[in-house]
Length: 106
Image (cartoon, rainbow, N blue to C red):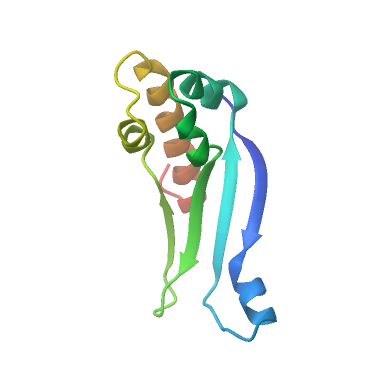
């Protein structure tokens, strides 16, 4: 499953426009229609968490972090149960590869 970049939202830029300073914070939205649709066929409510998102943000010490929801947790959140393990494992592995590449921890 190859992820497709969907959007990049720079929260810090938007906050400056309203006079509220924020350290660098960007939301990255990406996904694969095949993987997401397979999970939504089990329970459409997981669609609120798809496409996947990751938050790149800088803390007060200037250190950069990348946060995201674990796909396994998302399946439990939406009561998907068993039967979609291969899809979830593939999504988790792809996400791990993306995060590893982005953080230099591949």
